[in-house]
Image 1 (spheres, rainbow, N blue to C red):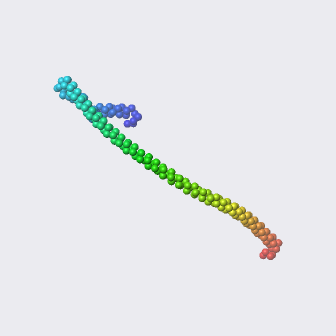
Image 2: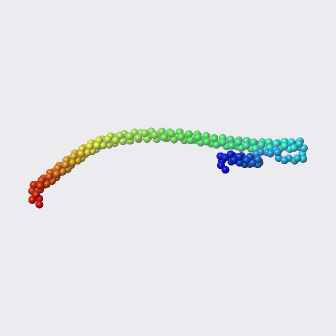
Length: 183
């Protein structure tokens, strides 16, 4: 059946109620309704129930004492671990201070060496900038020469085309004037 239909819901609730009527025994719950000896008188039955309750309370006290002992043991172990961790922290802090002192000393030495290297690098950079400026000037001059050469080549091509055109025109006109010579 579909879950959305009312019949499904009725069937589901019937199954749920039927399953809930089956009581499953648990270890943590005492059933006071267990069959006691029906031949005893009510006073004896009540006394039996008191003994059972006392026994359960005794078990609960024993369980609580075990839990208390376990909790105390865990607390002692946690305190020991905290003390060990605290000692490690102190040791790590001491090592950190020693490392910081070494780093400071090393840093001072490196700073001095870096200052000298930076000065050397600055000189090299100045020389490189100067060379780059000279190279750029040479490149600009070469580009200008290339443009000039390109313009000359273009002018030469144009002149060659005009000469070629003039020669063709001249040859064609001569042929038209002297048809016998052309044959």
